[in-house]
Image (cartoon, rainbow, N blue to C red):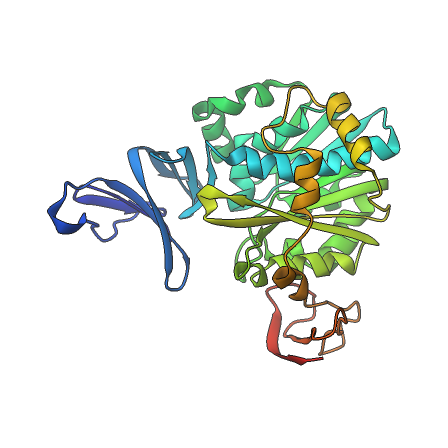
Length: 370
């Protein structure tokens, strides 16, 4: 849970009283934001001011002016976005999939669905950063952005002017609804579906949106032929990738023929972050073709993404590549399938505790040299 401390008063990310944090060695007190990343590890940075704290029907929200990262949006005590480096996340999430699709299909009309639900989804799409990047593509004619929390959508429209142009774009259609429900009741199919969701933490609002069942029965049927699905996939660092990144990647491999995982370091997250792109059409574009797509499709220039950058981002480290627990299609099996790679690889064994394949309902039962 994130704590916001300032002088002798403190509120945490949930808008309730917390403990007082004071400076060390008698130095003058200052405002700080502190968030627990995992047990025994916390991440904090100094604040200029607390711009807003409040709560909607679904979640708590805080807008901070931070010293190192500019304005930062906090939802339910978790950092969602920081002004100075949000472009890393959003360019990485959006452009690889759209460039691959537009170059392969030579589309005339493109419809994109940004599937967003509660927390991170909220901020990601509520703030409009993902929509902003999608709308930079000249061939895009319609963007459907789905979010469950209208109050936070309105808050971001009012207070975050960096993406105000995106919210005013006539191609953007904002729908207030549950993302899964919208996919299931809607009749429209899409060329690219973007899953900008909170991590699949057990008991969280989004863990069922990362299951094999959801990808197979809700997402894939809504893709046009040659369509691409891309999702944020959580921390992808040397140690943190085992939380959800590897599982998301391998769950998608059970549904789509071709899957590409890639990552980039995001300073405000204090970690490397991952994304996974999936399709039944191979990702075979050359560097020259992708470069031509960037020059042809995009309005303006990207701040981080270029062809060489993406090539590097999709080259995962040895530690991450070896840590790939595979999910199987047969839901009646108790043990997951094995995956053989180079000599010295491991047999990863996972046991299902429920009937539906998901990250949160699989139980780690050990590994052994293969």
